[in-house]
Structures are given as C-alpha cells and as structure tokens.
Image (cartoon, rainbow, N blue to C red; front, side, top):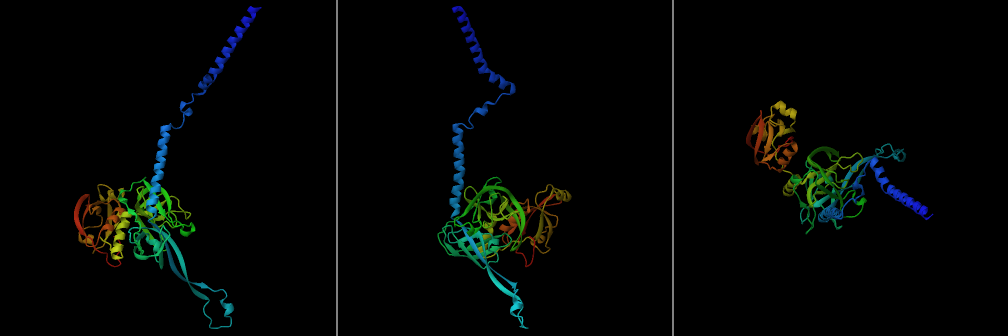
Length: 403
C-alpha cells in the first residue's frame, strides 16, 4: 500500500516538473517561429549619459537664442508713420439740399486723412541713427520711433534709397544701445537665422520686440514686388524661414552671435501671413548705402554704362565661352565708361575690383561699393579669351538707366 502511494507521488512530481519546463520554454519557442524580437526594443531609449548630453544641447540652443534676444532686443525699435491721403467722395444727399439752387456746387467733396503705418528698425549709433527699410517710410509725412523701453521720439529722415530699399533715420537721443553689424558674405545656408521686430505693431501691444527663429534657406535670391510705393526689383537677397509678418519690415535678421546679417524686407505669401519664405537685404549692401545716406543724404551711384544678364550654358555654348560663369554685357551706352574703355556687347565680365562675378547679384554688390571716378580692374572674356583692363566708373547722367 505504502509502495503504491510512493509510486503515484513520484509520477505526479515528474508530471509537474515537465509542465514547469513547458511553461518556461514554450513562449520562447513560439516567438522563435514568428521572428525574433530585437533586443533593442526592450532597452531604454537613451543611457543616462546620453540623456544628460541631450539636455545640455537643448539648454545650449535655448541659451543662444535667449542671449541673442537680450543682446539685440534693446536695439530694435518700432517705427510709426502718418501719411496724408487726399481724395474726393460723392455726396448722395447733394441734390436734396440744393434742389432749388441752380448754381449749386458739384456733388463731390475733397477730404484729407492721416493714415497710420508701422514697421521696425534698429539702432546703429549711440547718438540715434537708425536703419530700416525704405518702403516703411516711403512718402510719409510724420515719423516717430518707440524704443524698447517705451520712450518715444520724433524722427528725421536722413536719407532713403528706393533701389536698395534702405533708409536711415535720426532721433535726438544719446547713449543708446547699438546693434552689432555682421558680415553677410560669411552667411551659410542652413545656419541659424533670428528675425526680430514688431509684427502688427500696437495690435499685439508692448514695446519689446518679437523674436522668431529659423535658418538661412538660400542666398542670392531675386524677386520683384508691387506695393504702395511702386514696383521694386530686388537681387542678392537672403532667404529665411524665420517668420516675418507685417510690421517686421525694417527689423534686423541676426545670426546666432547676435550680429545683424540683413534687414527684413519682404515675404512671399498667399494669405498675407508668413509661409516661411521671407527675404532680407544683406547687411553688407545696407551698410554701404547707409554710409552714403549719412554722408551725402542720398546715394551717389557709380555707373559703368552697361546692361547685363546672367550667363547660361546655352549662352556660353553660343558665345564659345569656356564656362557659364560671369555676366554677359547684353548692351551698353555708347558714351558710358565701359564703351570708353573698349568693352563691347557680348563680353563676359568675370571679375571686377578683385571680386569674382558669377551673377547679377555679384555685379550689383560690387557696383554698390564703388564711388564715381573710382578706377577698377576688370577681367572679361571675349571669344573664349580672357582680357584684363582698367575702367574708371562715373556718375550716371540724368535719366540714364541700366548699370
């Protein structure tokens, strides 16, 4: 009897052991049949060291933007303008009040209205010089500037250049914070770009500027635009996806060091708001314009007397050129400096004043720096051969167009 119980207990023990083994290994065998699950899915996303590094990078990026906002923000101003608009309106009740008046006046009346405008700018000297976009102050009657601390000053228009869309204002103030100007030639596609200004002005309230962040999307862009001041053609622009909205015009586009690399000037939009395609005037161009505006009150332009166009592979092949670099002289003034120096239609400008010319933007940037009566060295290509010579640029005659 005792032996039978002992045998039953032994069988039950072996059955339990077998069951336990099956329970432990059956899931592994089943998973193996469907496909092995990668061990990485069971690991933590980041080790503790990597997590700390990620936090440091995030804080570093945040700190850079914060420091730029603090550094440049105090130099950014709001520009308020008033423009006098005159017109006529029709009086629908005229005949009622003058029914029996044979010599009654015409049913049209003149009116005069002050229309407000807004924009941004930035301080470039402790004694109150301010740079902005020309279209912000184009044709206005009154200009006032509000600093970041809320103080307001009447502003004088020192000078403005329609072609480059750059203007300089002056307020009567001292010891002002000054924006540091950078070098737009050193700008690289993909680097941080920070737009600072006053979008929508008083609508959003406050005197401290708004900061938006993006990257430099492209360089040397060209575009045209119609606005209240007329038809403008831009070249050599910086493109950014940092949000630019109405009221941002004239404000600075800065790099991660807080240096101004451009003046925010235009956007491409289908809605009136930002679509991430904004443009800025390179600060190197704006700087040269501002210098002349402050010195002379206007732009004293250098003139070569040529019309140029960008080269293409097709043009290069037709002209027998070695490559498609440079700009083509498509026409020239018979009495201009270029013609006097022996340049001809069909010549390809390769270098000017020691700088390579690969586009109309390059050409315009060099011409922007030159002064009338300045002698420069030029390298051209004619019939596949390179030639070097000197040209003395002059001041454009009245009514003369072109370059």
